[in-house]
Image (cartoon, rainbow over all chains, first blue to last red; front, side, top):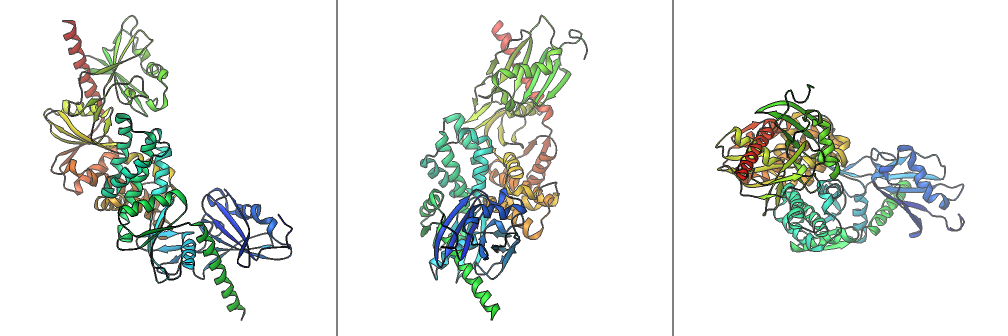
Length: 308
Length: 308
């Protein structure tokens, strides 16, 4: 760490989800420091957010000066640092609504980005709106559908820079619950990609059979010696297949971008390719930061407007 | 307890599932004692079954005599007291295959009833075959479909006294996992029957939307103040609706008996009645015992045959 002041940040960008906390110190347009911890929103009580943030950024903050901090994610939920009201779709992914979080350290001024809500079917997002805004900033004029795989994977229809509608699926959480807590857990470990292909085909073809197909995994383990690696990958395929079959109104006739890192995103790409859907993938990392930069730019414009 | 010998049992019937243990002492055709504990198969190591049984029945056993014990349920699984091989459908629910469990107490002679297996789609049952046999014993000549609601609910096609095919659904376990371990758990408690009706209609109509509808419950809690009692009942309706929609090949054009006790069975009856399926319900309690009595009768005939 260099001494504060020699290259102190103009502001700090924060991606604060249920299970993780990532921070970037930014000077001009450049990231000069980065850090992360496992102090996600899910672990923290209302009074613990400031401390969890300071544990990562305290050394970056110059004395006698206020450093703006801009956060996105579940940190803005009712159980978070401050509740940032949802904005209703259709709307641009980022707007002018920001919530100010209470702080004791005079060096901090913290704002939290608003999430989005949809009336029917009822749905909410927090954090993804910032990724979507970042993706649009990196791909100006892009229209189509964005799929964000994860614990609660989301399908988002974008048109003319606005989120038109979206739908959340409990897919990732269902996979975690079934593979860690259900009767299936004894017969699941590792990963054999051939199992994913089988499960995906079954899930896509008959998504309504999910509850029965889950028990079939157990029975094949007992009767046919289905390997734990095949079974675990097939479980993933069954769930992702059922999700994608049910999300057909989103992807049918559309261009899809899968926004997310690593192996999980590649499974969604594979699934969509089997359906001949035009699909590309984009890592989520840089989109969150690009979205936070955009939110910061808007905030500055707003402040300038109000100062005049 | 009366002194052993004054009215000692001819044999002991045992219903031993994953989470419960129930015992009946029988003299002639009459239950003279009954008991139960929470020492289900899931809690016991291989060497602990005999002790768990003796904790309930030791006082009933006359000295200097062997009392036969007949068990049904998960006690016959690979993780149970002794593995009782599966019998393959189509077959009568009970057959001549019984497994002898190892015992140290000379007063005990323990047999375990075999479960059933199906090759395609792979499926297994342990315990339900005894209930089905008991139901047939109580309703001779009955043909149709039996639905056994539960942690792993089962649909069973019976014809001319044989199990033709069956299908297991992970419905009850999914409900437990989602209501106790998922993000939904914060917004679920109590029971408001109006929620079940809504969820049932949604599950029956679009079973393939399950993973999305689960998250909608959460969003309606956040946005519309959906009550925890409505939400919990709707979750149940969504899952049971999805199961029944997927089980259509079983109930279509058939007479259905729902075999099981209490509130859960009534939900299945309600669901099937909305589909105009001819349905009756039957408590599961007496069917298990009736099935074990039948298994005992067969065992005696077999022994007589071998003695001649």
